[in-house]
Image 1: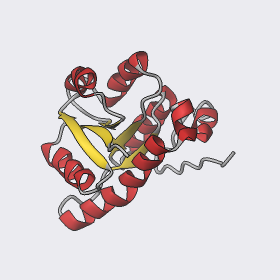
Image 2: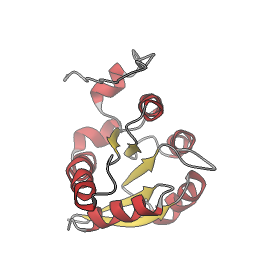
Image 3: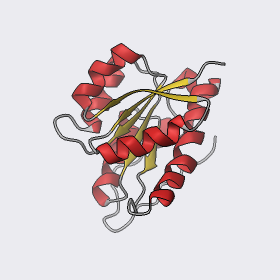
Image 4: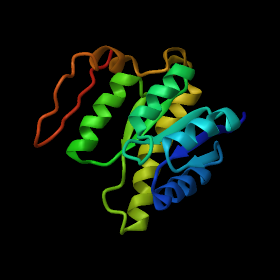
Length: 170
């Protein structure tokens, strides 16, 4: 079985390195490229042909939402997992990303000071989703989680203090 090819897009070199190290530690995954912003990512997509993209929401030059919109114009089915901080802005952006066609989202580690905790956070959240979206035909056919496809149209506002997003199973 061939490895799942991943493009990692984040403006933080520390986060790119962390995510790359975690993903490369799995024998089924291969990071085929990294990019510091959306413009670089769009150029790399045609060069490295990733099976999945891990995309930061907040970046300079071209943010994750703008990048996602451009990716969806080129390829409606490539899985894109948004990588977002647990902030009110991050929550709003994540919901918008899901409505624009993001496959799913993963929260960035909140405590980057503890390297092992950050590694474990990424390992536990990101790797299982990558494998599901790239190895499971149910997800590949639609390019988006079925519950998100239905439910994200109903989401219009985000509470100012907290966010609880529940997706019902279909």
